[in-house]
Length: 113
Length: 113
Image (cartoon, rainbow over all chains, first blue to last red; front, side, top):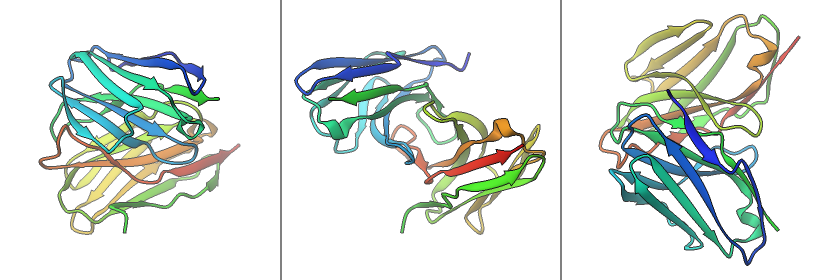
């Protein structure tokens, strides 16, 4: 099973709302990632959790707050977002070393109004 | 200079053509190479992965790596309209924290019936 499941698939939120994106994988991978992707651009890395600890934060604004409750779950908490934060948010998982591939979920399409 | 360069296209070919997609990279620390296919508004789907120079074949797809030239390619034989998508190269290097993926810009491919 090479599936990474993301919920919800679509989300519309106002600038004062608080919402969360969820990601789950059952491949036993010990690294999980959040990426942001704008139209016709490649995915941009936001956060990496390795062995359930935050190992990379690519200078993401604090209105995005990641959480890794256990090795198979990853959340992204959203608060006070801006319209320019509208994008496809992708979760991925892999083993935390150089010689393994990464698998992506289908993404959550977020619209901030 | 970007770490990974990929011609964004768009690339349009007739059905049955051989397609060649290419990426160049500047960081010799990159050792693991992946190709993803992404349909519109979906998450990237892993197509091929390899870490050695040479060719790797899987059905109609062949991944080629030339580490001496820092150049990777994906060949699609007998292209089909269902191959129409954006193709992203991605790479990882030694000692990356959590296995950070670096993406090319993506090449948009259209296969015409």
